[in-house]
Length: 253
Image 1 (cartoon, one colour):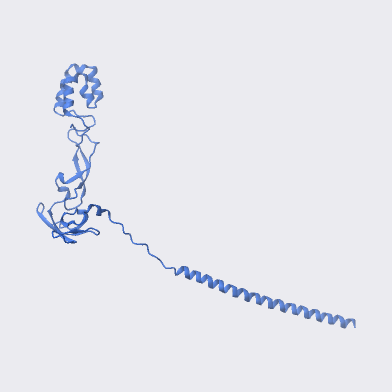
Image 2 (image 1 turned 180 degrees about the horizontal axis):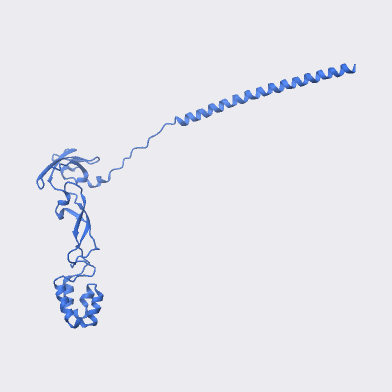
């Protein structure tokens, strides 16, 4: 009887264990199903975010509406033939005869407005000019940079590299800005008449040399009393002919 009772208890225990194992398996499946169901909306939401980010419309930057700098040089509603060269584009013909009158077809640049003789707005017109390059113009037709580092009083006369720019109302062929070798021609404010007067009156004390900025020669004349008069006479001649000039190398006024 005891053996039968133990066998019955073992069967019940096995039944309980089997029931618990089945319950564990069923709970695991349910958990996996729930995880799958929750992950699918997340992935779908991620895809929607990705697609939203990918399909975001691209707005192009607004085109620049800045007015070109050359417009400030162009008179509004003026005669097209009198516009500065920076306001137009011309079909230049380099085969024209040098020094002879030539006619070229031109067109105004964007944002430039001009009229003809009848006060009608136009874009295409012609201009008349002399066939020559810009560097061949007269010296009054361009402006060049000045140099204050070269000696104007020297033999031979010194030159310097200058950058020249053609005036706005002048038309020519080639580059409107060009380099050119020019003679040194600048002044520091010294007057030839003043230097000569000092040399004649107070040259024995070196006043003329001091005035011209040559203080070493001035001291020499001062302590030698004008080289006993010989140096004074020589300086009068040298300043009179313009051979002796300011110490900074500039020209007399």
